[in-house]
Length: 168
Image (tube, rainbow, N blue to C red; front, side, top):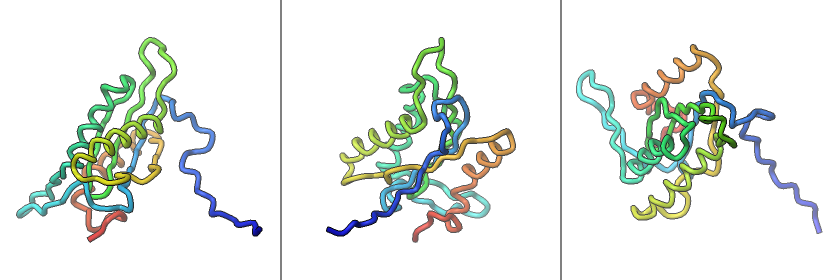
């Protein structure tokens, strides 16, 4: 029997970092196969910015983003945008109130979001997975980094055609 070498999956988390640590995290979640199923971007008239119109699955995703603060009392959503085939979230993880333990990790929070969104989306025709297996994260390092990410999220709809996740 041949010894087949399977491709090694790239590590997606920062090695040795405690993802239950209080801090701000910039999260990007892509749909499975980057299928545009979450929203449409409608070009505004004149100087108006593009308008994001959520699909039923996009509405469920938005509801579940906002529900994270109820599910996890130590989580706040500072900013988010639901694009056609991906979502950006600026997530704040605070110290657990009263020293409660254990704190949720960022992967647990995002896993909960993805799981519930996928389950609820099946009522609207979603088959299989809605989201890719993993997600991209960036640990926000300071005020300048935070402001740059905030601006990126705000301007993402206007730059959709230049976005690396853009598909026609």
